[in-house]
Length: 100
View 1 (cartoon, rainbow, N blue to C red):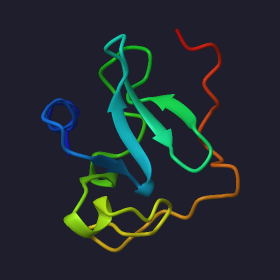
View 2 (cartoon, rainbow, N blue to C red):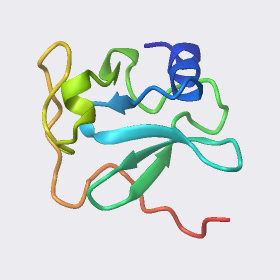
View 3 (tube, rainbow, N blue to C red):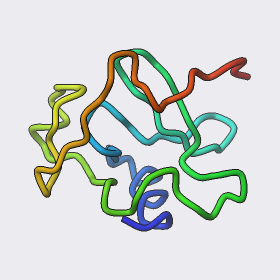
View 4 (cartoon, rainbow, N blue to C red):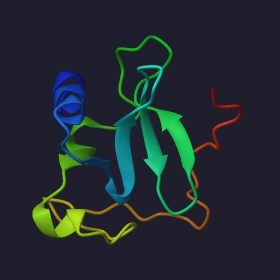
């Protein structure tokens, strides 16, 4: 998915994941698009500081299928079945410091 496709899907209320269903893309009350690792709440921005380059590959983002939405955070369910392994504690995701 492209950056614009991800934002449009999130804005339309669809559940967008990154890498596996443990990561969810959402928009916070400040309008920032974030990727959160659900099991521990760690969070990173959807893009780098420029706001134009994804923090992940386009092919790693996908919209939840109906059975994914039922909830199995951390499962390796991706359309291409190439789930990314997740280290304990959500390695690669940084905890959100102070949230406004």
